[in-house]
Image 1 (cartoon, helix red, strand yellow):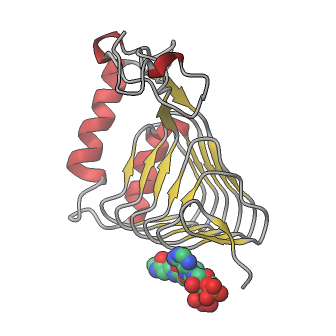
Image 2 (cartoon, rainbow, N blue to C red):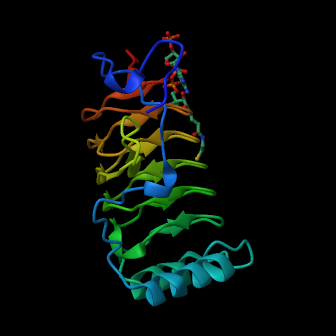
Length: 197
Ligand SMILES: CC(C)(COP(=O)(O)OP(=O)(O)OC[C@H]1O[C@@H](n2cnc3c(N)ncnc32)[C@H](O)[C@@H]1OP(=O)(O)O)[C@@H](O)C(=O)NCCC(=O)NCCS
């Protein structure tokens, strides 16, 4: 175990402190199941990088079909802009008439459920995965994310693992959401907090 100038941080009683001895060769995925075999995942990787994410493939309708073919539940009239990245379509559920803007990244190692009439603006990052930084094995942690009906997640906002954005809420541009957002709340900032509006 390595020592820092403050002593052995791994044994420190203050759990907010991180360890300093990550050994990524011992990385522990903790039995993580990607939900599909390697061939299917590789096929989606190819289809996504060559077709789905491409600016030369702008229409939403064929993209909805592709996502459904790969196991997503996609409602009617969902708009999908170019350069949208989706990790695992089979872990995605989007309700009708929602919009997914340019460069939205749905990094759904765990399930992501998006309601209907939801707007995810440009560059939103939906992050379902993290690591236990207090362990040398840097264990993978995954949590689902739920974005309920009629919410607006503004440009470049980040949703962290496990959060629920309740119906009708607005998350302002550039916010980092670390906790659940209550229905019809307007939250902003890092970490995102309710604003009186
Ligand atoms: C959510 C949004 C529309 C709010 O607009 P609004 O209702 O007119 O809100 P206001 O501008 O009156 O701001 C209300 C408060 O929130 C704060 N605020 C607004 N946006 C913020 C942000 N992104 N980060 C931090 N604080 C923010 C304001 O400073 C203000 O605080 P104050 O009352 O202390 O002065 C706007 O902030 C925003 O983020 N727009 C995103 C645009 C976007 O994503 N475009 C893509 C188009 S698809």
